[in-house]
Image (tube, rainbow, N blue to C red):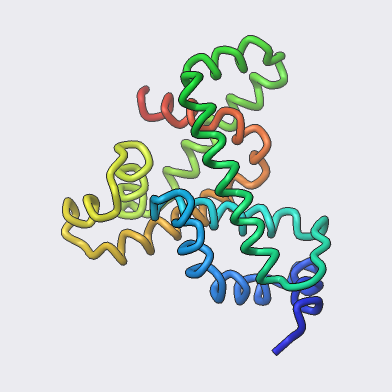
Length: 196
C-alpha cells in the first residue's frame, strides 16, 4: 500500500492509473457522504464527479498534506455546502435574469466564445452513442430520474447509471477546455440547443 504522499505525487505528475484507483476506491463512500447534505443521489454523484474532474484538471496545483482520504471528504463537504448556497441564490434570481445580465456585459470576444461553446456542446452530445444520448437527454433536459428512465426504456437502473456515468465522462473530457465559461452559461446554452 503506497503512502498518501506518494499517491498524491503520482497524481500530480499525471499518473492516470493512480488517479483512477483513488477515484474507484473512494467514489461510493464520497457519494454516500454527499447524500447526507444534498438529499439527492443524482446531485450527490454530480458533486463527487465534478470534484474529481476538477482535482484532475488542477492536479499540478494541488498540494495535499496529511491524509488523502480526509482531504477528499473535506473537499466534497465544501462542495456540498457551496451547492446548497447556490440553490439559495438560484431561488432569488431567475436563470433568465442571470443570463441577460451576463449577455449585457459580454464583449464581442465573449460572444464568439459562447457561440463556439454552443456548437461544441451540441456536437459533443451528438457524438454520444444513440442509447446513451437518449438516456442523457431524458435525465438532463426532460428531468427524469434514473428509475423513470429505466422504466420507460425497459432497462435496469444500473444500466442507466452506467450510461450516464460514461456520458458525463465523455462530455467533461470533450468540454474540458471550456470549463471557465461553461460555469457561467452552460445551463442556458443547453436549454437553447434543445429549444431550437
